[in-house]
Image 1: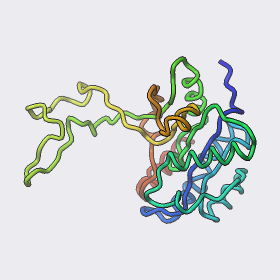
Image 2: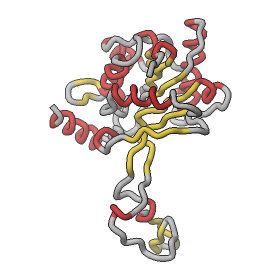
Image 3: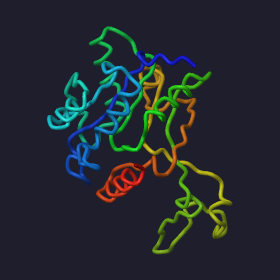
Image 4: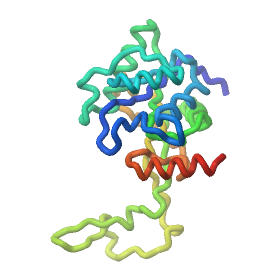
Length: 236
């Protein structure tokens, strides 16, 4: 299947503020800044001019340039707050790059730096999937395994209750429970109309890209960094 990668805009969102780890997007992981893993894998797929790092931070911009990624703009402050929506960040990047290059992109992919174990092969597979008939979006997911909704609890009036009330305590082995998946944050790929017309980050007709547990680590804490580093060292 022929994939026109030149008509895909790749956006890597990397704001400077982070609560769990200071300057998380450039925190060192196995000797490299976290964002470098995403930039280097994106470069295996897309032309250099199609890869955009959206950041408000000079240090993140400098690190991105070091790894061969041009910085076309500085992210506005209103899009760098804790309350900023990912969709708005992607729309800003898309509008800027289309105006800059006087062209329209067919598809937009968001690759978050917090997914360092996502590979170029995953990106290429998602591009193949979205070219199937009647597909608006491709979203990467991972099996919840033991964190299944049938095992989840809430506390109500100081008593433990099942989050999903089946009328009994579900003690079935995990292997017998229905497969449930969760977004892992590694890939959000959309056709242009989803971003421009529907004003969403996920369209109505969505296909999954299933990833493995170890590929789906999302860096949110120092412990996540330790785990990712261990996997990287043991995968060589």
